[in-house]
Image: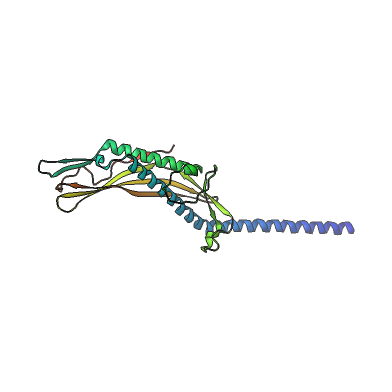
Length: 248
């Protein structure tokens, strides 16, 4: 009888343990399911915003560096006038444009590659810009405190941190875009912008999302003296052909 009672107690204990284990598994599953449906979108938006900010800073730095160090604005344009001073054609210097776009694109690509690999100390960012980045060799560029899901400044830094990674998934495309307008009497105002487009993948432990970052950065504004007729263009109103480099 004693043996039977002990056996029954052991069976009851084992059954309780099984029930507890099953209950824990169900709770863990429900918790992760809740996080995936409710919390992940909030964390993803936070990560997207952060990565977009860093990408824009890198793009702006690459363009401003090239402009300040090498680009001579006056050499960018080829302007033809007739004897009376009327502008016949306004065009780009194709050699200079292609060289400038290639250098800018390569610079952006290199810095984004450093960002992707977590080599934060090698990234060129604008002066006087403070950005919180995690410097390690695991490719983690940022860690989001789970407390941000509460949208409360007091709880922002609470809870475990979610690692954020980045992957460049497409070509980095840079384009010259211009706008030419009449300015005052017998003057033409030319505005030049560099458009950059980057496709990236934001990676969180439980989800990922593809984003496209597009930035337009002013390069030059030039005032050209001379009457501007309605038929002067050599395609300057349109974008200059793209320069795209594959990151492979």
